Image (cartoon, rainbow, N blue to C red; front, side, top):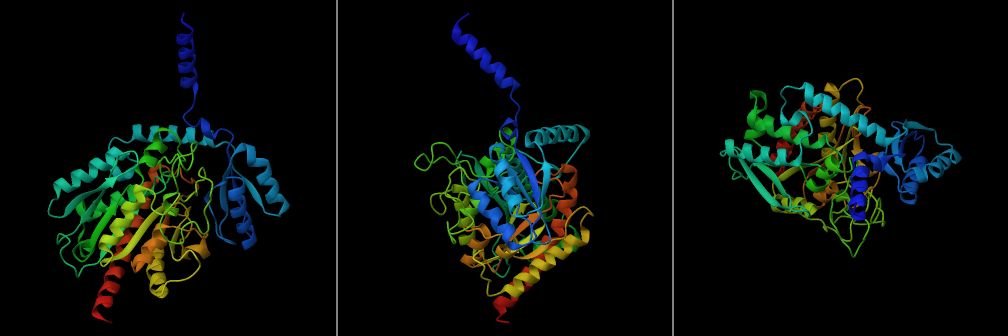
Length: 430
């Protein structure tokens, strides 16, 4: 037999025996108790030195941090924690095994659900794209689909404009929400799809005012390339998928939520192009973040609230990340606290209560975020929403989506009503 054919067959056999999550073999995850600010500062220092993947930064005295570490760095990482008297314990011994189990659970869930709505699971990019087109076609007097541009790999990035007055009534504020700037945060896109569903397909009388008095821009998948990659190759991929050979021949993508032109590359980032917090070579180097930027600029005179949705951790956060506060901080806190209270009132027992506050003080300082940029260009209320992870981190079972969707929807309604009141007061001169 030809030697090349033999080598090809060996390659096929090896590929077949390779697990989808083999990259994460030997990676472990640790929960870390944060008793004082110095513990969090050390964690951020080690993040760059050991290329840690911080899943949850925690909150000093309240919540533990959760950190994934590569096997080659595990010993040094744990030694640093021990030498500094930081309490820690093992959360996952092998990430690859945990992800394989999760895949099996998802497959069982799909087989046992005879019917489900798109927002009750984790739809692929094409399903989301088809849903947006379908809604716009079925409700042409209410919904317009906008193809805002293309991802690096050429996927359409679409959003919906939802308005009872065709966006022509300038007395109405705009509520802009987006999701999936970080590709592994699967629970975020269903929340946007459920919002569309409740505004358009299943509008109820008690919520009619938020459609009639507010216009909506909803962008369900900011980072479609990364999102698809989490389904096909690396479940915990976070960045975009852009290639810049001048910058790196080994690593692709940047952290989209470090790529905005506000405090760019100043803090909370890494200069390593392979890092999950690498901001890119320059602000707005990514087509995906330029699309968010352009929406904000086009409608900044009317966008009253911008909601950048993430997971996980139960937070409602606002700027600025340089530890300064907005001029309207009391109003910012009012809206954020109202959102948190609504979700807390409906939360499951295993969920944490929402923590509200400045993102740099509550979690950590990060330069170049969408939240800060929205505030910077003139949106009065710009927030980061971190959805629940329960005890499942990024692997929240889809059976939880009904709960997450409903409690988040109620908080969106509450913030929309407050945004409407503040918008009217702003333009009435009161």
